[in-house]
Image (cartoon, rainbow, N blue to C red; front, side):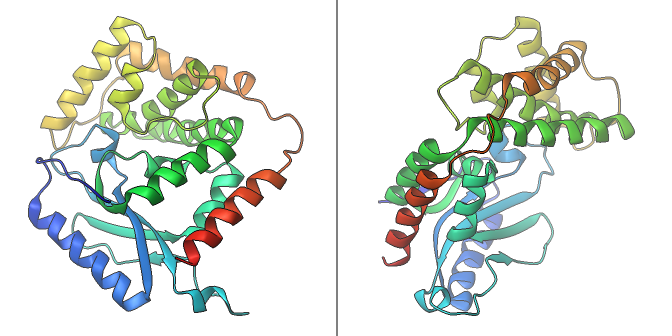
Length: 267
């Protein structure tokens, strides 16, 4: 079964251009794109009228490209054209980063906007991510990302940028409230729905999201205090809440990911 989930709010002309670009990439690079999703603010749940289209994909290369002492590049990048940004990772690269604690592949797997994909591939890869992802390392990924964006906001207090700190902070809160999980939703409204949060904070986020959806340039200003307090509190709490217990034994995660990779490469 094939995946396709495109909101009616997205420009059909741009979507058609992305579809054409994905077909071109498969043809010219001799790869099989197994999943292509939207990864930017549209998928995160807080788009602006002028938001970019950030298509990301996972592909499997031709078998000859894996059976060589001179491996090919494991990233496919295309030039930025207007609002369009299309890039992808080889499955092997994506799996290595997943085991290392990088949350990017997890986010792609959880995107609510899908240009194309194989249902079985995504479902099995989601199960694999849940089995091998280290929640402490994933949390540290969000902490470092969020702190970096929060510092950038201090230097340039664009209200548009608040969301780039808020979403990692919400991911940390979600992981804290779901202690048995390592795969958090990427969609901000879903994160809000699945956590116990103060009403004034939720109201402030919804008001700022609504403003962003209607305004190309939100300008600079002071962050609503419930949001600022929430971000500061989550970033302060995270180092103690998510700790690494020495060197992680990667034997099982590597074995599971290798098995999944071989199965997909030989399809």
